Amino acid sequence: MRDLENIIQLKELAPDYLGFIFYAKSPRYVETIDKSLLNLLQPIKKTAVFVNATLDEVTTMVKEHRFEAVQLHGNESPDYCSEMKKKGVEVIKAFGIHEDFNWELLEPYLDVIDYFLFDTYTSAHGGSGKTFNWEALKNYPFDKPYFLSGGIGPDNIESALAVQDERLYGLDLNSKFEDSPGLKNIELLKTVLKK
Image (cartoon, rainbow, N blue to C red):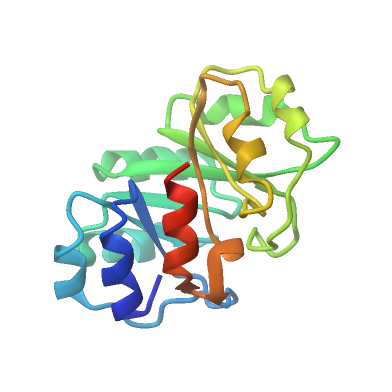
């Protein structure tokens, strides 16, 4: 999110989280952010999204803007995630899922994050608007709760809601609910959130 009016409209829909992407290669990249606006967003969890940023960069952004959560979409290590947890923020670690994904790679993260986020594997670290085969979630061997991401839209929201897994914590609604990158279609979201 980056458009002030759009964010204010979205706040009225009371999502649990609101993401701000600090990755320059993303079409949703946030260059500047209004501190006064962020203060108005309670009780929504303000979430800062990064890809391979340094710990210092993330820590500065979290402190300066009082983010409550960070979503990490790069190759951040378990030690990196542990350091972020020590800063008192919720840590969401994203992984791109593909047909041959090795779920055991997640084990070192179990004690140092709050949630996983399972997205569609792309070389661009997410944001593809494409889904992965959600049947793969049946192979997920751990108890750690997760967000489901990647291409969730009006055409498949019913299927996402029908995923029978008590570990599924939330759905990440992004590109399929946009009029343009970073600009959400409020009426479309209203309709879907009623479901």
